[in-house]
Image (cartoon, rainbow, N blue to C red; front, side):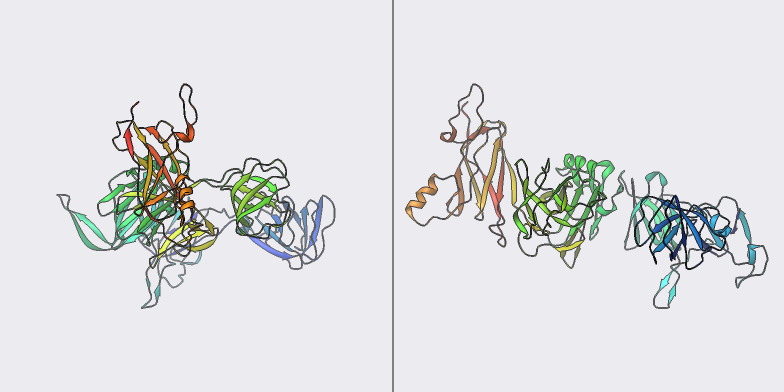
Length: 588
């Protein structure tokens, strides 16, 4: 049937009716065995008919159970297949099919149809009015619901001082819709800034004046004028950038707005000078690959360090299922968990969750695997547990690859990677907060490099490349900073590598001092730390290596990774100011 619509210069309001209805009744008699079962309801219902899906709210049914027929008195209901229905079970009927026992206006309504509450009886022209006076109507034959993904619609005003609240009124008699270019995709994010409304579409960023409009002269100059229009003209920012489908990457500080564009593989900043691609500051290749594989991109402003934090998070990998063979009651670092089945290919960094029978990872979170013990059966791994694993508990081990990176406006660069994976991040009163697994965490509180109850090591990677065109021998490794840093690895461009070097340990007697001199650790001199490099490269055909007797590595440049064990110094700041190496030009 057609819908009766009011012409757009009158006022009315809309109501929506959904095809699917729900009715819940109490069962008084258990079902009979057989292909079909008859149940009896305490309360008659005029909304139940054949074809509806039946759900037992007390004990779940197996498979899909539907209504076969309804008795004339609406008391006896016949349902398909043999199911257990106990006394006083709550039975829910969902979905409606045409049936003689159901009133027609419950069964024939399409879920996409819209109906209008009319001001006149029967919606007829000049019929008896309900308080609104004379109104004109037209008939619309196509009155389906529309999804306008690139349009904005606004309601009436809200004024707490005068008590006016028209936020639930969307009058079709007024022009309350402002549309952006649909070619730029759906609107993903809105942000109000002073008198501008910033509109983030998938492929474009635009702004619209709020309560003002722009009138352009013949020369093209804009003149701002007051207007009754709530949303003014939409003007696009320069550049073919959008927010894709990741509005969760948005963060704001002052007049700077940060967000990502997954389709174009870049991280962007919107400021007074327009849109700037900040991922091009040395991280273009990284974000091109990370955003291509990301399922979620979580962004936030860190008011504590004045950095934009963005975390690219991939879908979880295929989990490995095993059963715990013992009750692990203690929690913390280095807890060994033994399984009664071979682990398979799980690895360090995998999360441990309770495995549900439905295969969904919605159970309790137990912790993270630190390392795997390569044994046959039973197999074991070392885990950092936040919750004890009960005996014979089936668990699933999986990981979601992620990268959390910070951008610093002070140096216009990406300064560091972080070891935490936030579900959401924000700042409040200069304090940085993140959510993880449904819990709220405050950062910069407690131990250094501790995130979500786990302790992590800190590391810094440096490229030493003085006089880049010359092949050099790197003889030593030196650093200025706090006590506790170690050399985890140093690899030259020729693939020469050194032995790791431990942290400096103070020695207070001559014998131990001599031991330290010959040990592979840093030595301290004038508040600086030095160590000789011992070549640990594998033997190459046609070349002779002297092992520990050979000092230094050869190459155009070398990659140095310094590490700090934060579990030794959990509450002490350990800064690293500079790293250097004594080099000489190679003679061969």
